[in-house]
Length: 95
Image (tube, rainbow, N blue to C red; front, side, top):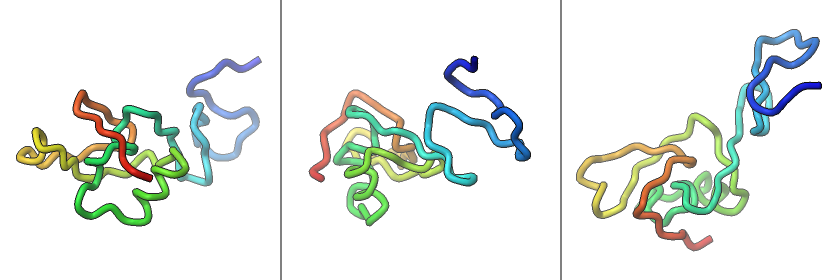
């Protein structure tokens, strides 16, 4: 019996790891929860594109995606955050 978390797949020909996230080829998709940056109004603020809209509707994002944080307290820092990052300034985005 295999437990949860990261582990090598049984009888796998590729050295890819399986996690609790969804794996499609080499694209790891992470589940984005309420309170995380991918669902925040400030994630990619000012230039939200179809990728950001898809994250907000599906609650999933590629593990290597980063975007600007437009929160007024953070904007001067030019922070790059992932969709699963979080802070106390979360404001729900309109879907």
